[in-house]
Length: 117
Image (cartoon, rainbow, N blue to C red; front, side):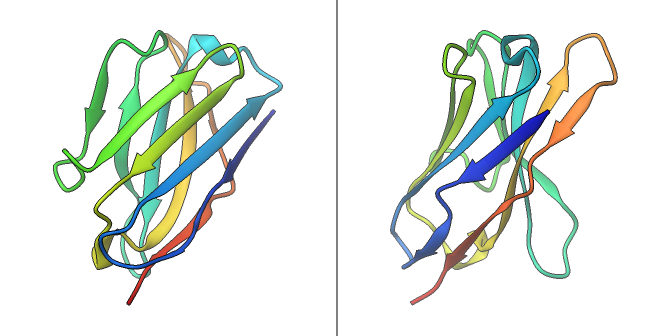
């Protein structure tokens, strides 16, 4: 089982990044997908989540209106489009797969996002 994030990097405030997460080794379409982030010295927090069919999405208050989560079950991918980035969005971003009706979960290794002028 693997979740591999990509797309992180250094961006100026107000800029955009698109994170990708590729899943393999499990039946991706049966898993709720979420993005989390962890800033230095802070606890990991959920940023966004999407249901197995992509029909429902939820976001942390701090990113509502700026971030968009989406998924492609055919390609086993989940994305996080991040717009109007702020300094406080700097963190390592992780994707997570949560099995519906089970305790199964998988994490990626994370990708660094740094917002700095």
